[in-house]
Amino acid sequence: MKDFLVSFGGFVAFVSFIVFIVGFFMIFAESKRKLGLKLMLFSAIAFVIGFGTCAANFSI
Image (cartoon, rainbow, N blue to C red; front, side, top):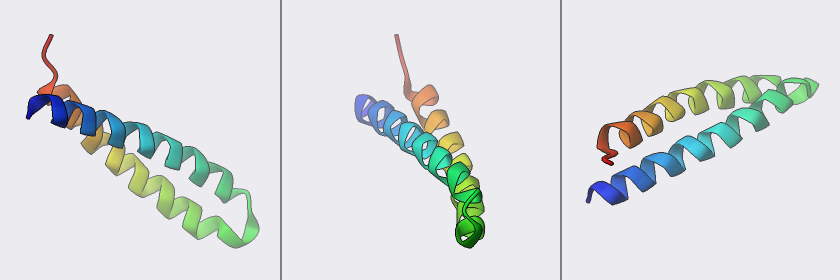
């Protein structure tokens, strides 16, 4: 079960990083500014959750 949580946490952290970059570029589009800010906020929260899950369940 720990291996699944480590993999899932890493996947969530990676996807949230990609969404953060997409949200950053959406800020420069005049009509999508609010959506870009929401994406950046939610992806930062998801990154913290995913990275925390990955780090807490990782074992060498």
